[in-house]
Amino acid sequence: MAETVPVRCPACRRDHLYAPQIYPCACGAPLAPPMLRGASPQPITHRTWTDDWVTVRCQECARQDQWPQPELGCPCGTVLRIPVRPVSAAVPTPPASSGPGSLLRPAHIPFPRTATVPRPSFRPVTIRTARDAVTAAARYLTWLGFSDVVQPEVRPSSGIDLRGPGLVAQVDPSTHPATLRDVECLWLNGLTASAASVFFSLAGSAQDARARADRLGIPLFVMDLTGSPQPVNAPADELISTGV
Image (cartoon, rainbow, N blue to C red; front, top):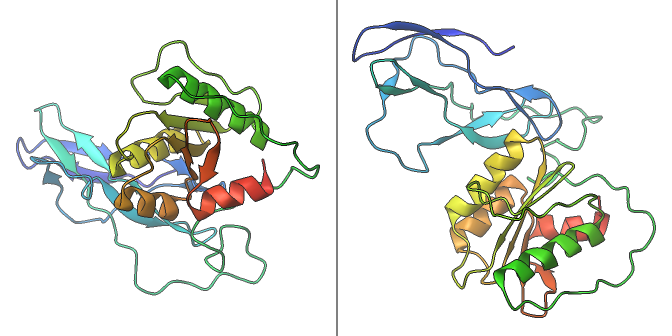
């Protein structure tokens, strides 16, 4: 259970008890941002993507990742940013028996290796429409080993085009590179669903978006009009090599 801290709204002086949202770490351990007791909450008057994320370290595997900044909405209408205890500069050395979340491994967590039989050649789908791009991505994910990949009839507001057990995927068929916000929104959807996140695009991704995907362990694929996805970062290469 996450620790509870008292919070007083500086606008109306109302007192609250706040407990941060618990999310699963990539290693499976429940994890919540550690509250900074005694620090005053700050009213949010202007939002930036940088301020909306904090660095949190898992006590089980020592992995560090970006997590949503804790916030509290007061009935007076003020939204408060709850201070989080910063990650110390010293990083504990994981024991030799530590699992795949160990900092001795790359920043991303490998997908579980269950594909022991070589896959047949992938059969692409020619892309003529945005719907074709989603279909091509769904077929590719199935080829990688994901089961029951579902394509909704109408694209949801979340931007998630494909879902399956343990999977959320986004397909960007536009002519503009994927943005940092695209990657972070996909990651947050995967975090909420305790699922792996995969991103496909026709125009690649911006440099900051790719850097964030590398850090968060999100596989990025670029597709040409033949419908053949190509990996563009290390998590994508790893997903192809290990399967699911």
